[in-house]
Length: 250
Image (cartoon, rainbow, N blue to C red; front, side, top):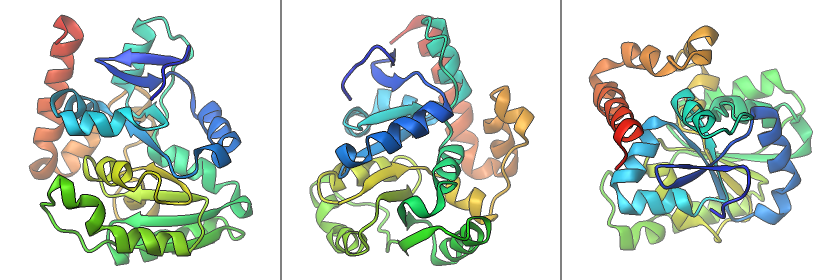
């Protein structure tokens, strides 16, 4: 991503220092210019994975925008005097765009068919004028070689393009969604946004942390308590690494 006066160097990755309202406004204003590109929402887990894995760092680096989806990253930005920095969480950003209802066409890629069906039902109930271009739950293979990643998803990319979307919401989870978007970059005719668990939150299949926990940066603790077996390594290990890098650098 090209560095600007509003991007902050977070362990080598450029993350935009902004707020939710401004991020939504900027994205809508640049939609035509950014078609075929993608936006990421970076939390501590994603940032530390990027620091340690070259290919994933590249996927983040090539995004047209990286937003801070995590209060620890916002604190890191504020520490560098980016006083305007605020959290831009993927679920909040997605809901903010969806509120614009009939202005845009939306495609949802990821998760399961059951979750997508509930997601779309909830969105239609909440925003009756919404334009749903389509949805697709990918037939995922756990391990895909880098050289064959794009080829494996060519059929999915074609289906996405046939629906002529403006926004392509990608909910594959990190790091898969960022790797998918990097390899699909330039091949899709809409703007891709990797929003992770937003599908589950808006579908109601997972409960999101209370607002007060989100505000003080403890949403990760709520998610860890909800699914410790799957998430303990993601949050405990990467949070410790984040503190280490923050205090002593690489």
